[in-house]
Amino acid sequence: MKRAIVTGATGDIGVALAENLAANGVEVLALARKNSARAANIPRSPLVRVEECDLSELKELSFGEKYDVFFHLGWQGSYGASRNDCRMQADNISYTLCAVEAAARAGCDKFVGAGSQAEYGRAEGVLSPSAPAFPESAYGIAKLAAGRLSAEYCSSLGMDFCWARILSVYGPYGNNMIAQTLKRLLNGERAPFTKGEQLWDFLHCDDAAEALRLIAERGRNGAVYVLGSGVCRPLCEYVYELAEVAGAPDKIDIGALPYADRQVMKLCADIASLTADTGWKPRVAFKDGVKKVKEEICMNSYLKGGRS
Image (cartoon, rainbow, N blue to C red; front, side, top):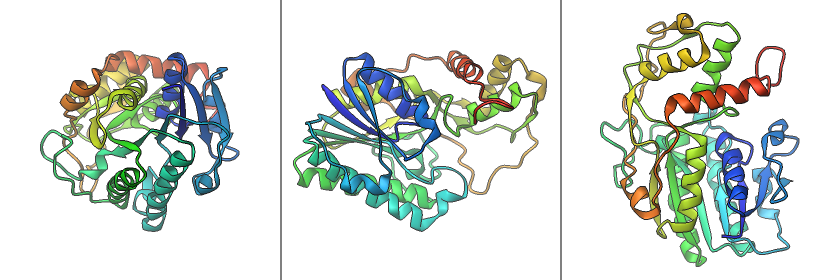
């Protein structure tokens, strides 16, 4: 792999992926939404070129040179009420197919798409690539449909395809629970939680980026991989470690919030096929990952009176 395209390049995974690819000598075309303040987070490197391109403009995107891999991470409505905005999520399916067409125009040999644990719904067991998928949100339904349709489309175009169903990845830039809780604690605010009995699987964005690069290089054509740490613990244990790193163990309120409707109580990835096919294993321990996120938050002043 010499050249790669990355959509969604301003999120935790996109930023880490651009950095990882450049560190491995890959030229990167990082696509960001127009006027995105978060584009400043994309690593500055002679190997990374940033271009403004909304998802709705992918169908018009042209290329002056050949690329090898297309990483499609871009998605609108990943958080909050937008996850059940049916029209918005339906648009995401269309944008994914536009991304496949853009990959073909760029001469890519492989398309790597970002799925979600939401494709499974409320699963009781460990999440494997072959586990039944019964999504319960418009977001999960759209991710599942986008993955299956883009696999078929890539096949018809003679392009290799892999789909990564991503669990709870955290980093300093996204709207993830780890970063948001750290910001609250570092600002001196309290952080309420449920009882935290749900079993959870967290993965640092650097590990996720490494996995995606290896999937592009070594992943089996047509494979679906589940991307997580492969280890799950009660959420409250993660929260207490996070609070320790923030230096605010007294500001955590476990049990202050009720469980959400249709709360997922177990989220753990089966990474056996991912490891077997690519050799990937997570390297960043949770506490070390939280320290890295804290350092980035403090360095960039993502606190009161600083950047948002």
